[in-house]
Length: 346
Image (cartoon, rainbow, N blue to C red; front, top):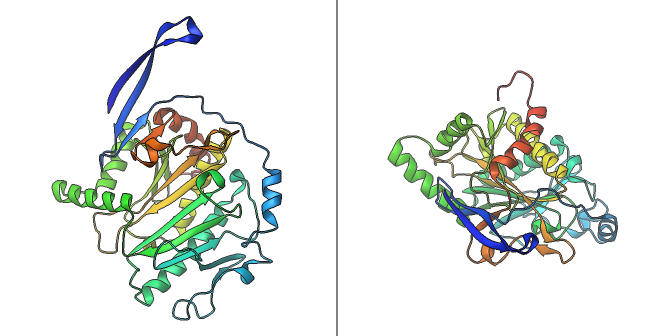
């Protein structure tokens, strides 16, 4: 961590000198840097979304009256029935795929669900439906069935083009950039130290305490030390788990519970958009641990719909966080405490 100070003459204080702290933090695994700067109060005004929700409803391809009419079907080797179902949820091929094997899973029939009202059961069922897709890909030995990837863009600031809650579910033999860098670094760490980076990280964060949010089942929840997100990240690390296919039903419930805790905490700040990504290893990667990152998204200027991904983030690949992760963790932790099962330690 590098601590710096910017000095300026403040027009709000008769041009008196003002010192502003800046921190440059390096991710302990990859060395990726994140700047803690551009500070602001972590409270945001929610707009009235009524018009956006209602105008988008009529053309939504994921609502129940249209989803079976407008979405594609899988080839018979993956799904003889064309699509996969779990209750009201439907999983079908992504009509604009990111890779050779891509799908979308709706999270039920409701067109819009406020972030703080998304139930753990809904998330767990959506993840379970994704696992069924991965199992089928593995069974037929699809050439892309190496890294089982899942992401969630919720609401427009996250990059979602649809209001209706849905997951991006795909498999790839080509790991995305961040995952590839993490796996290479984790492998090197394991070879050097004889231990697993993610296990050591969880142990260290529990001992240090300021970013540890708690454990739910075998998932340890942390605030990211060098966040991707402008308002910090929540990271979940699943012990003794390498790929999505190692997850149990209990794990799905624990992940869903932790995600709803993060959603509730950020909802109280006035935030209503987020991204989630899961970072798996391949089946033989003993050095890997499946982990996920929840990253809230904002508009810097809601009036102009100014995104939080500026040139610094998009082209320099330099993350900005407008608050200290330890202070963000203190605001988020009570929601995890409230949801941790009775008798389960911190």
